[in-house]
Structure formats: structure tokens, C-alpha cells
Length: 290
Length: 267
Ligand SMILES: Nc1ncnc2c1ncn2[C@@H]1O[C@H](COP(=O)(O)OP(=O)(O)OP(=O)(O)O)[C@@H](O)[C@H]1O
Ligand SMILES: [Mg+2]
Image (cartoon, rainbow over all chains, first blue to last red; front, side):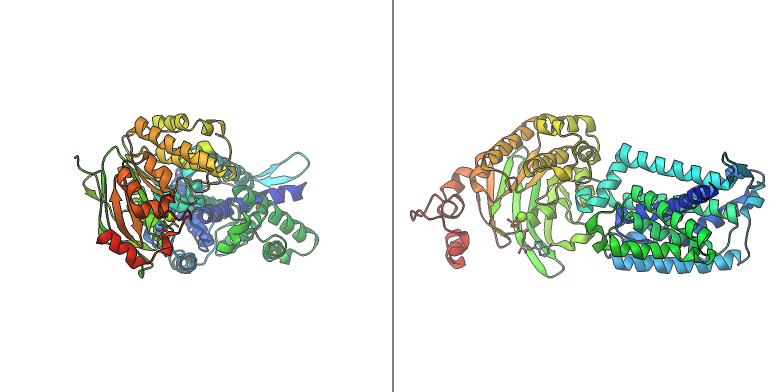
């Protein structure tokens, strides 16, 4: 039972992170390799707002979330708009450079000490008992809840709203989208904004649960196989991929060796690339474009 | 005669900075008319329409000379979504629908020209192409060629255009369906008041609905006139309509030496 809870929490973490990969990839065909760093930046955003709005944890959270959205839009406006829709390789390289720069800047600005934003917000990570004897931390429960809300919101947005449809349309056929009056830069900026918002949210929640340190970037990288296993251009796939990777990871840690934790996702990824390179829910031709 | 809605002036379009596909094309489209742009494969018809509706970065194409003037405003090298906002909608030759969206979503995704009534434009698309109503929930990737063409025109209409550009209406359609679609274009003009510029290989059907026609070859306009005049022209009869020449065999345009044609057209 505890194992199921652990899988659910880890899968939620991965899913919350990797919807960002999917959002950006679907719209722009670019793999953002700065996602882990942007996630960490989101967490540091919370660290900053927590000391700024002392005694108002909810305001601090909301401000940090708003900040993450703004950062995503800014990254697109300042850097990526020159590259998306042109050369995919140049754009991917740019995200790598951006990631390295961000990591260095965060190290300079915030140091290398582990921070505890949860304490700064004045909250405690209570342990909640579940029927069946399992336990889940309050932040763990919040993670599952947030992931559910984010995915629910994304599905509703993409399926049910006109701008969501336009986002899907631009991902499938950017030229036709432009000819139908859809401004591609607006769509791309929105994708970056949403991706950085959800990634930042994941970063904040992980930091609340386990403290904020540089290993956060590794978690961001570990979520990437989950996105690829799911098929990169599918949100349903991202959910399924996260579940697969998280299950493999939790089970192997439990029954084989805890040291495996960091390699399992990439092992799953390799296995997947051999058997079904376009992912569980991906479109077959998509892989050529990576 | 009233001022033209669209005017191309000595338009020159270059792909990848080296390939000049259109060299000095000038043409005019008067408001409320249907104008046909005819020509063989590779003549530069698609390029002319695309230059009017705008290129995106991926195209790596530019208008290098001349002007595109729409309703008195110069629009060459504007991005496509701005051109659409001005009231020009293109039905492209290929990749004309969003395959991962349903028929209804394809129509909804189109951004109408500012000031136009969105609902009404979409209703009109369903009225002119009733088949789309029955296919509302069908994913566009599964549509047949004819259904795709109807959806493509319908979703262009959802942009509430003042000028509709149609590239190869007849492509891949059965002859009966082609005539049917041409009549629908006349309905479109009657219902929306839109002006239509139509690119066609099938001169016969195009000249039936058009008020005026241009013939393009090797990136240039080589002939223009009313349908009566074009139909009567020896070369058009010979190469496009297959009714002239007297040999009984339909000859290809390319069979005739270039100099002979130019002499006839320019001389
Ligand atoms: N993307 C491109 N890059 C390079 N050259 C191109 C491109 N598109 C078209 N061309 C060239 O420009 C010329 C005109 O092409 P265009 O597609 O405009 O012709 P067309 O009249 O529409 O022909 P068709 O009747 O076959 O559709 C051709 O020689 C073609 O090879
Ligand atoms: Mg063409």
C-alpha cells in the first residue's frame, strides 16, 4: 500500500514536470533542456517571495506562481522567439546554454546551501494516515492534487477553449495556423509561459517537500524520460509515461537497490527507444523531428 | 471602373535567396469579381498567391521586388496572420486542414477579421457546405479529398475574408465535383460579397465562373483577358482546352518551342 502511495507521489512529480516538455515540444518542436533549471528558478522564486511576504504563505505562493509564468513569457520574448519555427537544433542548443547560465546565476545569487521554503512559509509537512496503514506527507498530497488540477485545467483549455484549439492547430500545422489568422508568437509565448508555470509549480512543491538544493535539476532531467516514454507530443502520454517511470523507479528501489534511483528513468527510456521509439501515445513520424 | 481590391505590381519572389520563382508579375483584381490565374505546373501560380497571403520564416521566401497592394495598403512581406486580419484568406494547395482537429474545431480555430461577426461566418460555412454539418465531430485527418476541400474553403470563410485566394480548387476532385465546387464559389461571392482570386490548371471550368483571367508561364504573366477572349485565343484552345489545332491530339504546352509562343504573345 505504501508503495502505491510512493508511486502516486513520484508519478505526480514527473507528470507535473513533464507536461512542460510536452507543451513546448508540441507547439514549437523544440525540446527545452532548460526545463530543470527553470523549475529550480521557480522554487527559488518561492524562497524569495516567502521572505518578502512573511506571514502570508498563500500570497507568497501565488506571487511565486505568477513569477514563474512571467519568467516563461520573458524567456520566449527575450530569447526563444528568434529561434522557434526556424532551426530546431539551434533552439535546443540555446535552451542548453540558457540552462547552464541560469544554474550559474542561481548559484551566485542564492548560494549552495539547502534552503527550506516550507519553514520560511511557517508551515509543517504533516504526515497524513491513509486507510490501509499507508502514510502520505501533506506536501505529497498537495502534489497529487496539483498535478490533477493542472492536467484537468490543461485538458479543459486545449479541448474546450478557442485558444486551446488554436494552440493544437499551430502545433500541427504552423503555416496554416498563421494563414487562419493565428499569431504564432502569441501561441509560442503562451506555451513557454504555461510550461514554466507548471514546471515552477513542480519545483516549488518539491522544494517544500524535500528542501531546495541543486539536485532539483536532476529531478527535472529524470522527468524527461517520462515525457519521451509517453511520446513527447501527448499529454495523456506524459501521464502514462510518468506512471511507468515512477513505478519502475519505486519498485526497483524497494526490491533491488536504492542506488538505482537516478538511472532507472534513463534505463526505461532506452528500453522504450528500442521497442517503440515514438512513445506510448506519440505520433509515429514525430521522432524524426527531434 | 472602381479601384482594384488587390493589385500586384511587378512582383518578384525569391526562395532561399537564389531561386526566383515569380519575376515581375502584375495583375489586378476588381472588387466583387472572380479572377482566374491559369498556367502549367511550376509556372509560379502558388508562389504568387503565397506572396499575397504572406510567408512565414520556415518558407525562407521573400518578395524581393515590386508591391502587393490590398485596398490601397502595401502588404508585401507582412506575416500571414496580419494579412488575414486585413481580410485576405487563402485556401492552400496542400496541408489545408488541421488534421488533429475535428471539423467543428477547424472552423472554430480560425480567427475572424476584426469587426466581422464570428458566429455568422461559421454559420455561413455550414450553409454553403451542408456536408460539413454532418461531419462536425469527424477528425479532419480522416476526411476525403472533397470533404477536405470543403472544410478548407469553409475555414477560410470563417476568417470572414474580403478577398478569398483559392489554390487549385479542382485538384484531386472528380470532374462532377469540380463543377459543383465552382458553383459553390459563386455562392460564396453572392452570400459574402467576397472577391475571389482562383488558381487553376483546369482552364475549362475556371473560365466558366471567372470574370477575368490571367495566364502565367515561367514566373511571368503572358496573357490576360476576359474569358471570351481567352477561350478564343489559339494557344489557350490548343494547350489548355484541347479544342484547337485540328490534330485531334491534345498537345502539351511544353511541346511548343518557347520562342514561338513568346512571338505570338508579345509580337
Ligand atoms: N519552397 C520552394 N523552394 C524552392 N523553390 C520553390 C519552392 N516552391 C516553389 N518553388 C519553385 O518555384 C517555381 C514555381 O512554383 P509554384 O509552386 O509557384 O508553381 P505552380 O504554378 O503553383 O505549379 P503547380 O501548378 O504545379 O502547383 C517552381 O519552379 C518551383 O520549383
Ligand atoms: Mg501550385
